[in-house]
Image 1 (tube, rainbow, N blue to C red):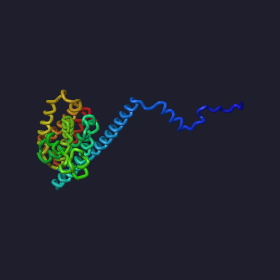
Image 2 (cartoon, rainbow, N blue to C red):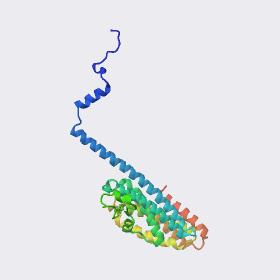
Image 3 (tube, rainbow, N blue to C red):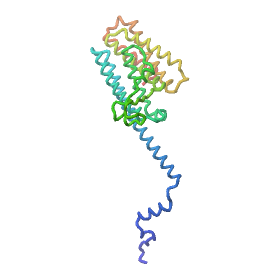
Image 4 (spheres, one colour):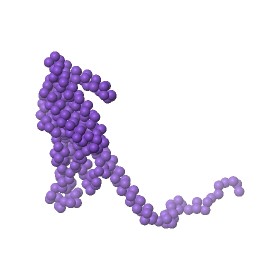
Length: 285
């Protein structure tokens, strides 16, 4: 009667006891058990997706570093050392791709394709750039996939695979680059070839631009056969590919018409100026 708060009846019981009584009253039903299993499955899949995103980011970074290294091939006196170093970097990238392949064992790759696609595209760009410098030709998707067949390097990895018996036969697994990732990587390759053309002219190499012009024209013709019938990403890359081809052909035109009157050390500056004019006419940033 003094105006204080009145105790409720269940306040005399400890909180833990009330919780146990509540659980006893409402035991977990089959529906709740199913939802808990769904939650565990979705959490596991989400964690794997995040790990694949991180691996794809690492693959992209290392592939870009390989491309930057290969651009020094035209100016460096020791070209073979650059190629050897690029091969070491690509081997490191493949080890990252091997981890991706291990994560996808027993999984449908296309459920995680969005997570790994950027890294695979950048790897295709790097390995095709190196292949072009070596052979002056385009690497095929079959050749790329042959390099992505992995085996267990030690006994620990082998024994972890249930399909092996006593570790006598090494387990092999692979990760295949999809045709769309291959096409997108080749489309990005054309931009690197355009930069290679400008840098080679700056170093006094007059033959490479004409060779690159023919090569890029063949790639562009191949992409035009796909046209708008292919995936949206491929058709979107076609415009950028066309710009790279136009810049290389403009460089060849300048060499053919005005090459004799422009000093070699000034050709790269002329090409850079003309490239900026082309970008402004086309509305590129």
